[in-house]
Length: 94
Image (cartoon, rainbow, N blue to C red; front, side):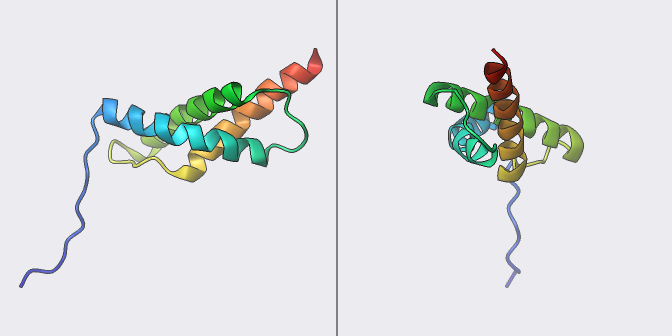
């Protein structure tokens, strides 16, 4: 009887970006919770920054760890939090 083996799932680039997009909608909210203080941005901007942070974090992770990298929640949340911090800081400056 063969031992159980781990199945490696290969994502196409379109599937990879779609997974990042769906995860980004949740990641934006988590990223906003990390950034201290009040952020004068709405829910749509939060979702858009979550998607952008997820894509940026996922692409950086894929660049560092190779094509078999499955996007991690941590790097996506950090990317979204960084973008929210930058955008919220710029809006506070005006």
